[in-house]
Length: 352
Image 1 (tube, one colour):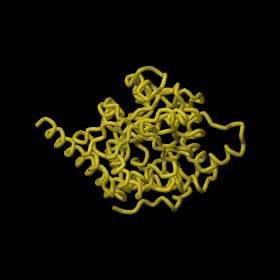
Image 2 (cartoon, helix red, strand yellow):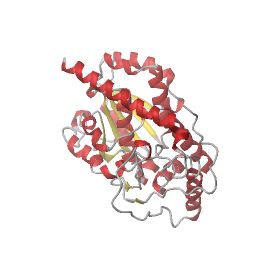
Image 3 (cartoon, one colour):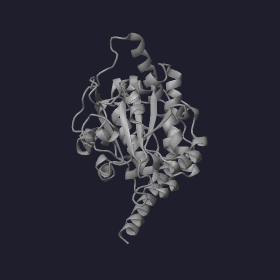
Image 4 (cartoon, one colour):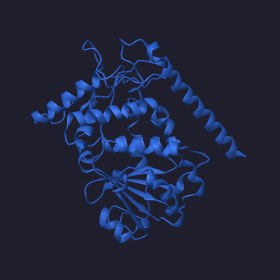
């Protein structure tokens, strides 16, 4: 498969496809974004029935507006693929890079390259394909923020069934929820708190911890455009400590420095997150347990937004000869086929 040419700008004659969007400036949830779609290379997304003019962010800040436009120009001309370039998406990277355009650009390029080389680790299907995965309540986002105004991203590791889901399935869950959280300016500014509950974590799940899975997973996490991210681990055990001993040396310093182990010390957890945002199972006062239907609905209500995103990084610009990337698209389709066969085999094993 040829190397993706992302570090050399394309011809100035390129005419990028615009990405209209609606920007929700409130902190209650993400915005929606849509884009035109061509059915290039059998990878397509639902075409919106109407276009909405993009609302510029920071219109009253000339300096920031200039940086957004500068980054947009770089991204729209970075390679032969259609790339997302609406304000809200670009500002994610600018915020986490302290508004340094070069740093934001390089971070985006590295993420594009990772997706090009490992397409199975990134969301590539309409949202309705992930409803079954979402309904297992392995990962979800709370409707309230922690003490520092950060969205709270919960991972219930005991809900993972290794016979049903792969490491890439979990990566897709992470991406779906991170898209939800980062389509919000307050989250871009304040960051994300990850609550990782290890109760019920199975020994079988150690199969996920292969060198390849760890390498790609940590690369994707490091490139996520989040300036502030903390990890709070609860209900861990001696078994969990053994798993961490395997995983820890392979983590980046950035992730290592942001991990906190609370075990079952709820006062310690509340000191970081607050008591009023958590349910009773974590010593909190926000109800007895999580309302999963309500929490998942936050994301499922944005189906049109998500379905408009899967074209980016897969759809070629109109002027590009598709044969140039024939091997890439063949690899993507082959990977999808392998995943379908693997899922069928797992389903057969479960039925037995």
